[in-house]
Image (cartoon, rainbow, N blue to C red; front, side):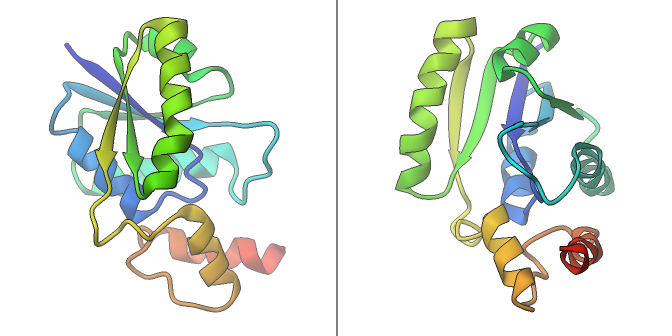
Length: 161
């Protein structure tokens, strides 16, 4: 059985994230979507909310081989724990590759885990969690950029800011 891990902050999960996860699910027996908790960052959504948003979006699409979890440790430790041999990362533009390459090399050195880069769907490559939050903060419509269930949560979180 081949197990892959798709790590990210997912704050919030976007249509681009879901596209990469769903495409990944076609290639691997089991896919773990892992919300990486970074103590140095202050996310808009709590860890549990991010996990639940992703679970809800994927369950609606029927992805039974996808597991959703979180970790505050090294992603390589999570990979070892679940027996994953590959990390899958979506790439939007050149800057993503430069940022991800170093991490991929470190992950291989730490745990022998390879990283597979999936190019973003050109229709979705402009979408990022940061852009979604910025558009929503300024009253823009993020429909289609995030799962429908994220929109009311985003509005609520912005009212609390």
